[in-house]
Image (cartoon, rainbow, N blue to C red):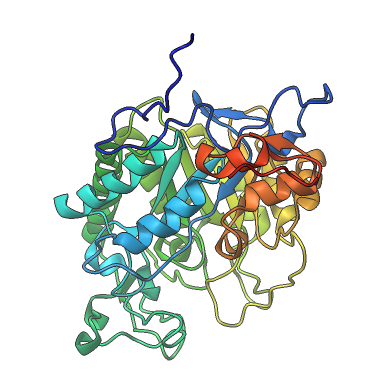
Length: 411
């Protein structure tokens, strides 16, 4: 008789069943002999294979103390990761203390923080799941309160903030309620580039599979790109080449700091949504994209906005897809893939975006907040049979998703 047993996941200091293949893997072929749709086909980026193309976008939780992740992060991220996104990317993680959005943001600039990150990574890997980290600096949008306390009010020293240590390309605040930033010196810019590289090294030590650079939503790197926030007259301001210099320096430093076979992701705001004055535009994003790919970026997640309070966003289902499609076209002939994010609320729409070549990957944030089992839900919607965690799927006949039917439960 075969030696049947509940096999333990390897390299974990506690028992949890091995998940091989990982949750979120579509059966191929399906029970009817067909192949799964592209959304549920694996994709390989710089040698790392992700079992499907539904990724968790970074979601700030504002739940850390002194930059340290807590049991909340394990419960939040673990609940999603066990249910099988192609990659789980944790929230914007600051490279320096003053680079946090709020006093409760996650950081990765010291050994104690690195240990907490390693615990989260170890759990994801115990489930055979891929996990990445978004590294960031909030720039002129730093030292504010958590959004449910007040949207945009300065966090004072008494509230744990650092309003006198907020920096940006120029001394222009996001709005009158935000801290007034100090224009960074070239020495501070160099130190910031070094800090991104140092955090990337710590992320590698913690075991992450992917590093993502946050260059969106009005934070430091985005604020250097846009003439709305960057009024410098030195080599970091003025022309397109100068305004993109810091971004490219960070990319080069991070790429050099991580293993050659490690995927490097990049999130960008494709435009500022401000038309009545010079701003960052889709055309400039399209121009920048091949420069990023040439420097070793493997994945560009295309978002938008967040830089200026007068932005006029035209929303709607998958409203950022045209920007992602333009970036994807500009990257033709490279190995760099493109992700679309924002108001993608059904599996059908996600698959359509892949079919019409708007993107290679779909990133979802709020959808996972509402339903950690989004990958399973979309599999049911698209009638895709997939693997789920043993502890969850045994009562469903060993397969998740597929055509809805009444299951025979065994208790």
